[in-house]
Length: 227
Image (tube, rainbow, N blue to C red):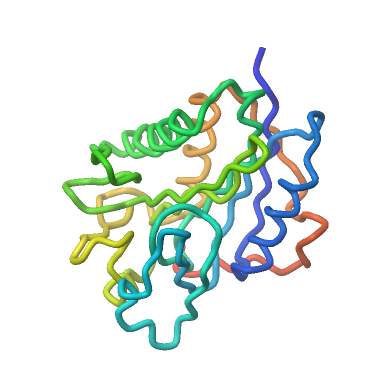
């Protein structure tokens, strides 16, 4: 029997209020709390994970740098990128942390195959790569057996800010996006496929949910660079 997964599409949002909201959601969970997947775009921001070193932030300029409590190094979020936050009770889903990472990566890899884009993992460097260039980054946190933070999947964005950092702590790491690989430019098109592949990996049944969460103020969705 499939477990239900509430899908919340939050539009474009600043980073910090969403971070606080998913942290509060995780802290308030009980054994009866349902699992959710939040999908959104963020305003431009560099986030520095718990292992992050400021030396990898080369020239942020007008883009804020925010230390956060996820795993990993520095990454960039901005319009045209799908950000997905899986808020999952890992014990109920029957997965461990390593399997969680593997399944998220596989969902992205399988999403890209819909447009004949061959993607892969790289040993010791979580995320998804095409021809050595990173198309999706992962940064997760597990607290009280439940996951938060998640994935950043480049679709149709301005990639220039990646030149201002060592992405994920790797000097000179190439970064790419779905549009440049021959895939669609619309985030909605990629999101629909990603939801299906994510649910297939974890055995979830997607259920649409209200596009708001109590801790997050309403804000109109903005398309960013997606057309």
